[in-house]
Amino acid sequence: MKRNKTFSVALMIAATSLVACQGESESVQPVQSAPQVADGKSVPANDGASPGKPMAPISMDYEIVGNPIVGAPVMINVNVRSGEGPVTVRYSITDSSALRFQQGQEERWQIDDSRSKQSQQIAVIPQREGRLYVNVSAEVETPNGMMIRSIAIPIKVGAAPPAATINGELKEGPDGETVISMPAQQSVPE
Image (cartoon, rainbow, N blue to C red; front, side, top):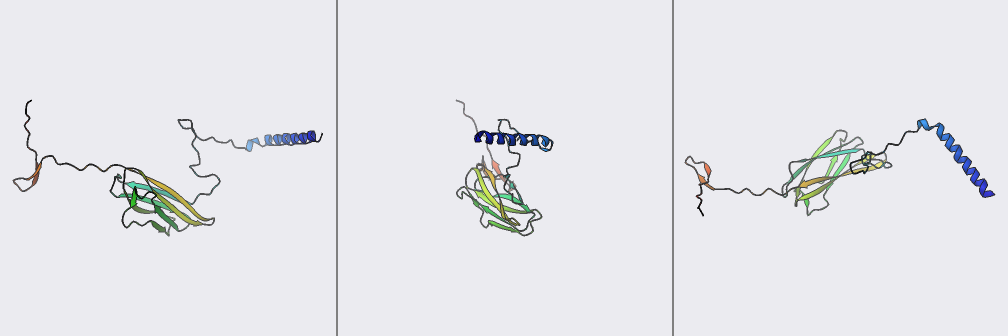
Protein backbone atom coordinates (compact mmCIF):
# COMPACT_ATOMS: atom_id res chain seq x y z
CA MET A 1 0.00 0.00 0.00
CA LYS A 2 2.84 2.34 0.89
CA ARG A 3 4.42 1.65 -2.51
CA ASN A 4 1.24 2.69 -4.39
CA LYS A 5 1.05 5.88 -2.31
CA THR A 6 4.67 6.79 -3.20
CA PHE A 7 3.95 6.10 -6.86
CA SER A 8 0.83 8.29 -6.74
CA VAL A 9 2.75 11.18 -5.17
CA ALA A 10 5.52 10.92 -7.81
CA LEU A 11 2.90 10.84 -10.58
CA MET A 12 1.20 13.97 -9.20
CA ILE A 13 4.55 15.85 -9.00
CA ALA A 14 5.40 14.89 -12.59
CA ALA A 15 1.96 15.99 -13.85
CA THR A 16 2.21 19.32 -11.98
CA SER A 17 5.67 19.93 -13.43
CA LEU A 18 4.44 19.16 -16.92
CA VAL A 19 1.53 21.60 -16.62
CA ALA A 20 3.84 24.30 -15.22
CA CYS A 21 6.32 23.84 -18.06
CA GLN A 22 3.60 24.13 -20.72
CA GLY A 23 2.74 27.64 -19.55
CA GLU A 24 6.35 28.76 -19.95
CA SER A 25 7.00 27.13 -23.32
CA GLU A 26 7.01 30.47 -25.18
CA SER A 27 10.18 31.63 -23.36
CA VAL A 28 12.13 28.43 -24.02
CA GLN A 29 14.52 28.80 -26.98
CA PRO A 30 14.87 25.89 -29.39
CA VAL A 31 18.17 24.06 -29.34
CA GLN A 32 20.16 24.71 -32.51
CA SER A 33 21.75 21.68 -34.04
CA ALA A 34 25.28 21.72 -35.34
CA PRO A 35 25.65 22.21 -39.09
CA GLN A 36 26.04 19.01 -41.10
CA VAL A 37 28.93 18.38 -43.45
CA ALA A 38 28.95 16.24 -46.61
CA ASP A 39 29.81 12.95 -44.86
CA GLY A 40 26.97 13.38 -42.35
CA LYS A 41 29.16 14.24 -39.38
CA SER A 42 28.32 17.35 -37.42
CA VAL A 43 30.67 20.25 -36.85
CA PRO A 44 30.65 21.96 -33.44
CA ALA A 45 29.34 25.52 -33.59
CA ASN A 46 31.50 26.84 -30.73
CA ASP A 47 34.80 27.07 -32.70
CA GLY A 48 36.54 24.43 -30.59
CA ALA A 49 36.19 26.12 -27.21
CA SER A 50 35.00 24.03 -24.29
CA PRO A 51 31.55 25.27 -23.22
CA GLY A 52 32.38 25.09 -19.51
CA LYS A 53 35.98 26.24 -19.53
CA PRO A 54 36.93 29.91 -19.76
CA MET A 55 39.21 30.78 -22.67
CA ALA A 56 42.36 32.89 -22.31
CA PRO A 57 41.82 36.50 -23.51
CA ILE A 58 44.58 36.16 -26.10
CA SER A 59 44.29 36.11 -29.88
CA MET A 60 47.10 34.64 -31.97
CA ASP A 61 47.60 34.21 -35.68
CA TYR A 62 50.55 33.55 -37.96
CA GLU A 63 51.79 33.82 -41.52
CA ILE A 64 54.42 31.59 -43.13
CA VAL A 65 56.63 33.64 -45.45
CA GLY A 66 57.80 31.97 -48.63
CA ASN A 67 57.87 28.33 -49.68
CA PRO A 68 59.36 26.03 -47.00
CA ILE A 69 62.06 23.71 -48.32
CA VAL A 70 64.49 21.34 -46.60
CA GLY A 71 67.62 23.04 -45.25
CA ALA A 72 66.52 26.65 -45.89
CA PRO A 73 65.30 29.02 -43.13
CA VAL A 74 61.54 29.50 -42.98
CA MET A 75 60.27 32.81 -41.61
CA ILE A 76 57.02 32.83 -39.62
CA ASN A 77 55.29 36.05 -38.57
CA VAL A 78 53.51 35.50 -35.23
CA ASN A 79 50.89 38.09 -34.16
CA VAL A 80 49.63 38.25 -30.56
CA ARG A 81 47.04 40.48 -28.88
CA SER A 82 45.50 40.47 -25.40
CA GLY A 83 43.46 43.02 -23.51
CA GLU A 84 44.54 41.89 -20.05
CA GLY A 85 48.17 42.88 -19.57
CA PRO A 86 51.71 41.68 -20.22
CA VAL A 87 51.93 38.47 -22.25
CA THR A 88 54.75 35.93 -22.30
CA VAL A 89 55.05 34.02 -25.59
CA ARG A 90 57.10 30.83 -25.84
CA TYR A 91 58.11 28.86 -28.93
CA SER A 92 59.00 25.18 -28.91
CA ILE A 93 59.69 22.33 -31.31
CA THR A 94 58.70 18.80 -30.37
CA ASP A 95 60.84 16.90 -32.90
CA SER A 96 64.28 18.52 -33.11
CA SER A 97 65.45 15.96 -35.68
CA ALA A 98 62.84 17.28 -38.14
CA LEU A 99 62.90 21.01 -37.37
CA ARG A 100 65.22 23.33 -35.48
CA PHE A 101 65.41 27.00 -34.63
CA GLN A 102 67.81 29.16 -36.62
CA GLN A 103 71.00 30.11 -34.76
CA GLY A 104 70.31 32.99 -32.36
CA GLN A 105 66.50 32.64 -32.48
CA GLU A 106 64.92 33.60 -29.16
CA GLU A 107 62.44 31.06 -27.84
CA ARG A 108 60.72 33.46 -25.41
CA TRP A 109 59.12 36.84 -26.09
CA GLN A 110 57.72 39.27 -23.51
CA ILE A 111 55.00 41.70 -24.64
CA ASP A 112 54.41 44.59 -22.22
CA ASP A 113 51.84 46.55 -24.29
CA SER A 114 49.47 43.77 -25.26
CA ARG A 115 46.44 45.94 -26.11
CA SER A 116 47.74 46.53 -29.65
CA LYS A 117 48.63 43.67 -31.96
CA GLN A 118 52.32 42.80 -31.57
CA SER A 119 54.30 40.86 -34.17
CA GLN A 120 57.51 38.90 -34.07
CA GLN A 121 59.24 36.96 -36.82
CA ILE A 122 60.74 33.61 -35.94
CA ALA A 123 63.01 31.50 -38.14
CA VAL A 124 63.13 27.70 -38.22
CA ILE A 125 65.07 25.33 -40.46
CA PRO A 126 63.32 22.15 -41.69
CA GLN A 127 65.51 19.04 -41.68
CA ARG A 128 63.16 16.82 -43.68
CA GLU A 129 60.10 16.91 -45.95
CA GLY A 130 56.55 16.61 -44.66
CA ARG A 131 54.30 18.44 -42.22
CA LEU A 132 56.26 19.84 -39.29
CA TYR A 133 55.02 21.90 -36.33
CA VAL A 134 56.19 24.87 -34.28
CA ASN A 135 54.32 25.19 -30.97
CA VAL A 136 53.44 28.66 -29.70
CA SER A 137 51.99 29.29 -26.24
CA ALA A 138 51.07 32.64 -24.73
CA GLU A 139 50.25 33.23 -21.08
CA VAL A 140 48.69 36.23 -19.38
CA GLU A 141 47.78 37.02 -15.77
CA THR A 142 44.03 37.72 -15.43
CA PRO A 143 41.76 38.37 -12.44
CA ASN A 144 40.92 34.64 -12.63
CA GLY A 145 44.60 33.64 -12.48
CA MET A 146 47.20 32.70 -15.10
CA MET A 147 45.64 31.69 -18.43
CA ILE A 148 47.43 30.08 -21.38
CA ARG A 149 46.53 29.83 -25.07
CA SER A 150 48.48 27.51 -27.38
CA ILE A 151 48.59 26.85 -31.10
CA ALA A 152 50.61 24.51 -33.30
CA ILE A 153 51.77 26.11 -36.55
CA PRO A 154 51.87 23.52 -39.35
CA ILE A 155 54.64 23.93 -41.91
CA LYS A 156 54.37 21.88 -45.10
CA VAL A 157 57.94 21.32 -46.24
CA GLY A 158 58.81 20.29 -49.79
CA ALA A 159 62.00 18.93 -51.25
CA ALA A 160 64.85 21.24 -52.14
CA PRO A 161 64.86 22.08 -55.84
CA PRO A 162 67.37 20.07 -57.85
CA ALA A 163 70.65 21.81 -58.61
CA ALA A 164 70.64 23.46 -62.02
CA THR A 165 72.78 21.74 -64.60
CA ILE A 166 74.45 23.80 -67.27
CA ASN A 167 74.00 22.55 -70.80
CA GLY A 168 76.98 23.48 -72.86
CA GLU A 169 80.29 25.00 -71.89
CA LEU A 170 81.11 28.40 -70.37
CA LYS A 171 83.37 30.40 -72.71
CA GLU A 172 84.49 33.97 -72.99
CA GLY A 173 83.04 35.81 -75.98
CA PRO A 174 84.88 38.30 -78.21
CA ASP A 175 83.82 41.27 -76.06
CA GLY A 176 84.93 39.63 -72.77
CA GLU A 177 81.43 38.54 -71.71
CA THR A 178 80.94 34.97 -70.44
CA VAL A 179 78.56 32.96 -72.61
CA ILE A 180 77.36 29.39 -72.76
CA SER A 181 78.63 27.68 -75.89
CA MET A 182 76.21 25.06 -77.14
CA PRO A 183 77.60 23.72 -80.41
CA ALA A 184 75.28 21.78 -82.67
CA GLN A 185 75.64 18.04 -82.47
CA GLN A 186 75.65 15.97 -85.56
CA SER A 187 73.38 12.97 -85.53
CA VAL A 188 74.68 9.75 -86.98
CA PRO A 189 72.24 7.78 -89.16
CA GLU A 190 71.68 4.22 -88.04
